[in-house]
Length: 161
Ligand code: GUN
Image (tube, rainbow, N blue to C red; front, side, top):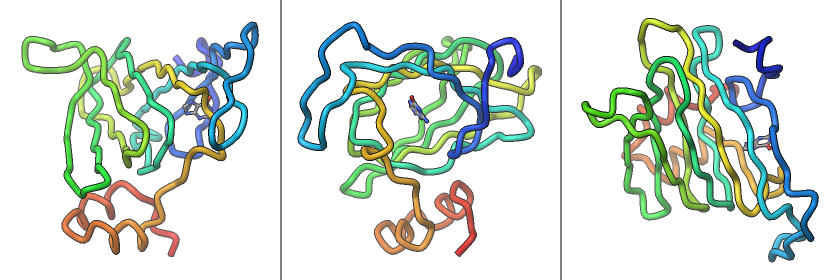
C-alpha cells in the first residue's frame, strides 16, 4: 500500500503523500502569511507506525476514510474537553467516513486492531498546510496545559524529554 501510493514517513508518525495543492489559484493572504487555498494528502497508519502523535494545526482539516482498519482520533480542544472519534468503514457501529477537525485543536490518531494491519485516509486542509501553522505536541507542555489527560498524552506523544 505504501509503495503503490508512493507514501513517505511523516514526522507525526504514519506515512503520507501530498496529492493536491491549489497552485492554479491565487494564494490566500492569512494572518500568518500567504497560503494555498487548499492542500490534500493521503495519510496511512500501519503496524510499524500506528500512531499520529499529538499535534496542533491552525487550519481546518477534513478527513476522509478510504480503506483498512479503523482509526481512533483523540481531539483536545482549547478548553480542555476531549473528544474521541473513530473513522472506519463500519458505519452501522458509528464509525465516521468523514471527520472535520477545526483549526486550533490538538489531534492524535491511532490505528485500531483489525484484519488489514493498516488504515488509509485522506485529508483536505484549508488554508493549505504550512509548517508554520502546525506545532508538534511537546509532552511536558501538553501535560502542564491539560493534566486531566496525562495518560492519553503520554501514550500519544514522543517521550524524548
Ligand atoms: N498534514 C496535512 N497536510 C500535510 C502536508 O501537506 N504536508 C505535511 N507534511 N503534513 C501535512
